[in-house]
Image 1 (cartoon, rainbow, N blue to C red):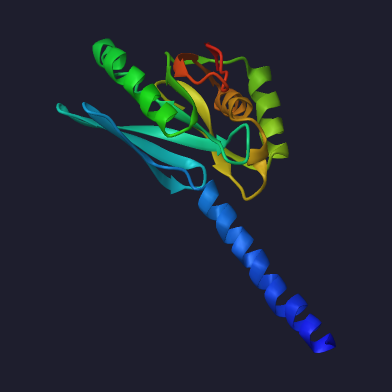
Image 2 (cartoon, rainbow, N blue to C red):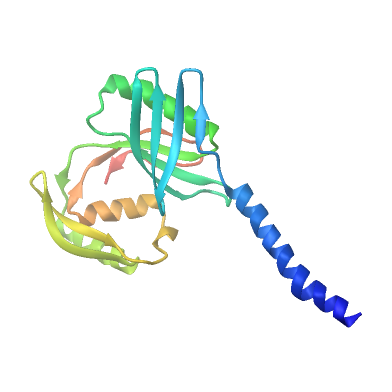
Length: 199
């Protein structure tokens, strides 16, 4: 009888735990393709928290940089999709609502946004942002220059920095780079709220 109990505890127990983990993993996986009569959207992960969203219709293909973060529940994720600043407004008016429909169909909490023009940020804000990023295990390297604006180079060190809200890290990284620019929210899900503001 004792041997029977040991078999259950040491053999069946771990197998049951493994089975439960597999079931949780399968349930956690989210669909990545949303198809509609006139267009298709695909989300492709390219690294930890990084992805791109592909949009296809009869006129061709477009790809958008995206960041994926933890959503409001274990089975949800948030995706932040960046629309290129140079995209024509006519295209934006067509594509953004379709991206929103596709991401909704995939069950994503989402924000679709684009950047405005760059402008320098106050030096005191840059120093404070660099200090906070270091506390979150980001590494700050030498300054560079983009479009005539001096910027700090941001390197990510291993660490649990993703526990911070994306919007907070986004603001800190822009301030550390010594730039501000308006973030225009073009569409967002009801749960994910990300206001238009200067970053």
